Amino acid sequence: MSDGPDRDEKETISDRAMDWFSVLFFYVITLLFILISLVLIGLAFDRLYATATAFPQIALDSLFETIGFTTIAAAVFELARTMYEEEIRSEVKMTAPIKIRHFISRFLTVIVISLSIEFLTMVFRYSHKPTEFAYLFEAAAVAVGIALLFIAWAFYNRTSVPVEQFERNTGGKRNG
Image (cartoon, rainbow, N blue to C red; front, side):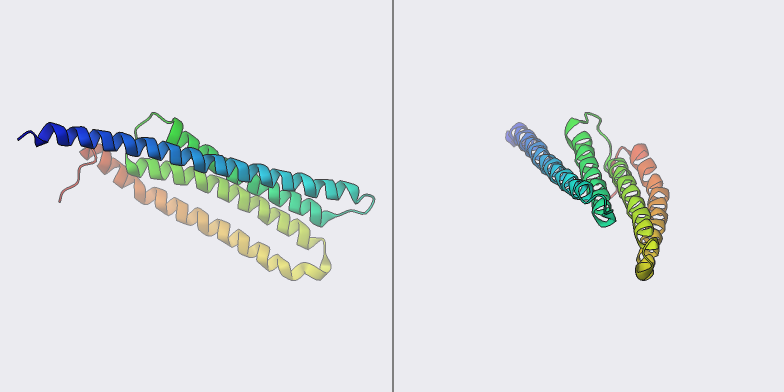
């Protein structure tokens, strides 16, 4: 009969160990994302330097690469920041559906903005080169992808709210 307190204590120790490991894991992943972001910013500066040293000849391709590297760096950094705020720093305990929807919404915001910048860059790049007009179809495909992502995101938000309300009403308890 003495298994009860020992078992609860073991669960508490294992829960604490898992919480500690989880925080450590997210610190490592967050730091890796920050390092990747810094490398991408370094590449952006390299491309910008290549653009500046190419004057008086205009090197638009290097400039577009700079925009691309900067956009990806911002997206990666925002992902690192989101992981840090949601998994490490946050003291707010949320139910799983709320936490997932919050994380996905922040992540998709960054992705949609990044893809929109990429779309505008593609349109500008290919519309100024008559020999590359065919690539505008790729830009249009990116725009369609952005629209589909918005639709899927809206559908997910609409269908996840009832699950969140169920979790709030039942305290996260399920039958079965």
